[in-house]
Picture (cartoon, rainbow, N blue to C red):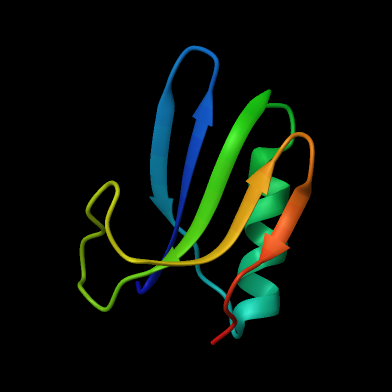
Length: 75
């Protein structure tokens, strides 16, 4: 899966694949996945490889508590 979400909280971090028919669907699923996590920041990334590497890939959208989601590059 080329899209994945990296997220950071006050106590940890995680990364998982996000599937969707287009970038808008991927971003909506990523936003839904963060609900209730007390996330400090997150990024939706694109990576052509089958297994995402934490901290790797092209950042398409970024989330912070203060700014919410900001689209940096849509595919």
